[in-house]
Image (cartoon, rainbow, N blue to C red; front, side, top):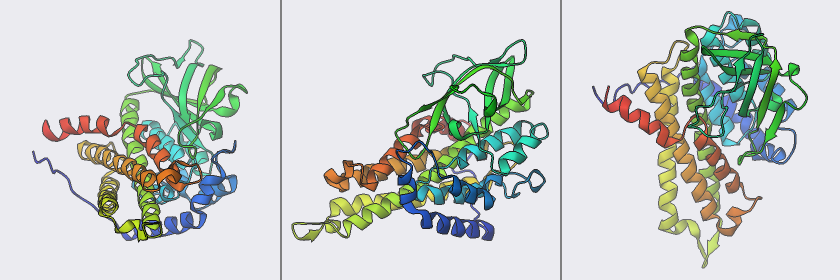
Length: 371
């Protein structure tokens, strides 16, 4: 079998319009919007979230019958790419992924909850339980009374969420949807991330009655698809952030002088900038290739390859771009006031979400060479 495999890439008029509108909307907010909430208790601007809801972005990936836009999850890629350019920290990604997990596990059972998410109620997935990625510790379970007991770590946007989709160890894979309004006052315990534009919290689950429990053969496949789509959306956001980091670099290279010469005239700085540009273009090709392939059905081999390649390429590109942005700014690049600092922090966060590049290349080697 060819290592190249499926190379389909489609960028239709609908995607182009969505990308143009999303870029315009996010550009009007700028990095100033992200900086407003870096050190505040409020994770995101409520009025900004209402604008996002009004544009229908929370319904991307849902059919119109469920209150969605009926565009498919691939349509989220241009939106997340645009938001990544300004490091916009909102619970949109968490909500979109929670929707995908519920739809793929049992859309009929979760219909009412899906409609509330499309209408603007924030949702997120609570999956990680142990402090180490390799740990087999499982704590969240249903007790004999049908109540959830356990804890979850580093749940994205948990403090803002109305719905928690909790993975359970219940004979076979299962999901419990929890209304956070039913949790104890101290159940959600915020954790500080290196990227302060994103928020996470640990969640203590003690004798919690779930609003919905989903079991069955569809859950394991839904969880697998959720992790692949999560990798894709992080890749889309990272691609936008890398492009913005490059803009920050170029602006500085064109204005900063040393020895009466613009530093952008030195090859030692020009060559890495070109490398970043090439890598950003490659990342964009990968994310839109994946967006072309993913659909409402179960993700197959081609879709898995596309999502993993996008994640590996995009987050490595952002890591390199963020590192160069800091280094090229010299001592100022290490300061809190310099935007380069925001990009390298986003890169560190994005690397670890849904697996780093090494993790995905390990799976890609088997998929591409042994299939």
